[in-house]
Length: 123
Length: 154
Image (cartoon, rainbow over all chains, first blue to last red; front, top):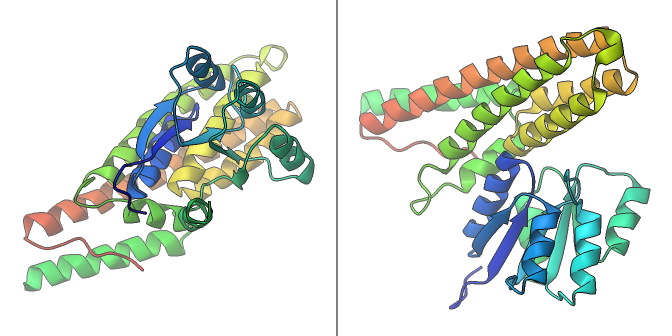
């Protein structure tokens, strides 16, 4: 993915290893990447008017505020960017709950480079 | 060039064995592909963080499971194992990840003996993959020092 102006992405994950890998992945795709550790931090950022990302990739299981609650809150704040969830729960019920929260896409861990690239290119 | 070719062959054979033995899976290959001129130390950075994070988690698990049956904080165990499963999965440390899956079965059942067994197994697998990755990085350093390029696996 190349673009004259780099798109911005936010990675939200409490696991530092996954955070750095996802950041590396998005850098590879040409994004300018920021990271946060928990859903509460991204909600606080947007509530303070400081969130302006083209893409958010969020872990669905986080200790303080999980991805479902964070996504619902962001959508209620009018956040319209693409939000992609990543989860280790691969049952259909969980998937339905995650998507109902307002996600655009859901991937199961570990995040697959090819599938993510395809998702981003197909918009 | 002979020494470079020899080292490169050694590297490919060694890395192939890690995949064959199930120590690493395709996720590690994907991480290697993210390393380029703009991010030349990416794999090393990720793996170093994995080592630091894993050792903290193992330490916390040992503490959480060092009490008698009645006082084990299984939520704490769950949190540690969940994170370990996530990070090992993200880096491609397949056998570590698989032990974490078994570990969950034990703490869900509040089986302290099973948990202690899983803790030992996950430690064994973690230190095995750590040693192998450190050997891999030493081979990379030798290749670069000899003037060669690190082979890219397909």
